[in-house]
Image (cartoon, rainbow, N blue to C red; front, side, top):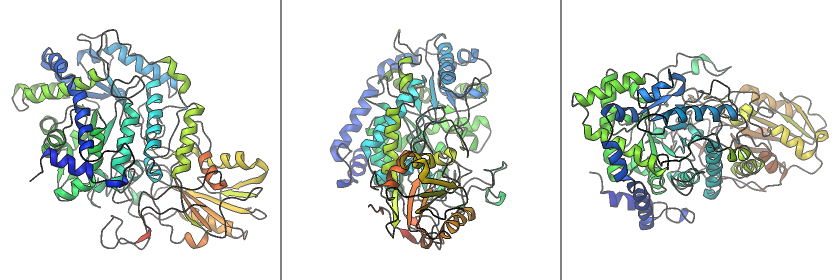
Length: 634
């Protein structure tokens, strides 16, 4: 039997104890914060219900639809189908290009058309802002969440997300699909880097900070955006082998076809009620208390039932027990993963408690079928009214529906987009995220005046440095127009061009004082990032071996979205730094290597040994190389 809402909130909010920073949510104070956040949305309830009651059935079901802009046949469809929201998926960019001006004009075009409809109901426009507004050329790109988890710095996470909100809002867009509150338990999962930590304690603290940063002083903050906590719930706990089948599409360049399967993504989390709550619901408790306005249910399942189809999860636990008063938005085409035909799939997700469906394409069919389901009494009109009321609560709280409210992009924010001030905070995020795991023979910090030979595929590759969800969904290697500096460029700036040489393969290091191998993973995102094993590439090991031939200390900097097997690497290097996916500001890495900033990061994930027979944390056969919380300094 599930506990009462009061008991559940009090127990969950009190679990963090003394580990939480000041301002984090504890006990009765935390529950009070949850009630305050709910009250702000409920203050809009009467107006929201009045607006809902004034709509026709066709207008209501249109508000429950979100469409990818790629598939919109005509701007007239915004009015014809009364669409409530638009999105740009991972690689869905404006036709005019991917620059700031193109995005601003694109958003203004859609919002202007939407607000010319009757009744005048502005659209919400959503994007994935996984580590900054990284869709847009010139944006500040922050470390992925796995690195931010190593900072243990909630105030810094809040600053990072505040900057992300400002840069998103500068383009006019006002909804971010973030933060990700996954608690990854198996690092073979391709979305591991989107999670702050394997620990629910870290996730509940930093997740709440991220919500506060994105939404600012509240949903009406003109410099804030609507946050979307995702993916509810258990997406990081799926059992190996329960994920998607073999992908029919090709993977990243150089990836063997045999490894293109998805053993964890969109799989099934198999835990009893108590363990599921203890691990996977904690971040949502604090996110709701911080006032998050929207939540995205997961593609994954819990004990054989897909989250999008679970009334237990979406209605009984999230809305009734946890008291969430915002609205639920499905993941991209999630309803199409369920059994049955299109009509049955829509019936299932709406009756489970979904309020808005990210269709993302055949919206004309979705709105028709949902209206039919109501007319056939297979979906109660009360469920429709509840969904639309929840959507309107948020739109009203954001100030979108106030008469005379300007909904265009604010040109005064453009000068802040990718600004030096924003990049300085990103640089600090990089500094604090790096974890020093080994340091012998005084290899680090680098000696003043040292001649440095830099090598490896990730030394001078901005795409590799930023990882997935950067400009495109899966990301890509090579030059990407984010601004910032690669790690090689940063080292040259810091120590002087004459003191730094470079070769990709590690050759030519003779005469150097120290060799730095910057190695690791190339970009990937969900699905394509799933692996059965996590060895270092042969190319990376060869770089280190070439540096060794120069008989100099060797430092390995690992650029990756998760821990990799380094058992064979460790004896060959004098120092090892986990740099994760640092984003656009390689200067932060150079700050740590040079000693300008002493390493302070602590592992947010346990680091396994290669001999492990399971990489699911806590399973028999999991062998630890570096424990959770490890991290050296100078």
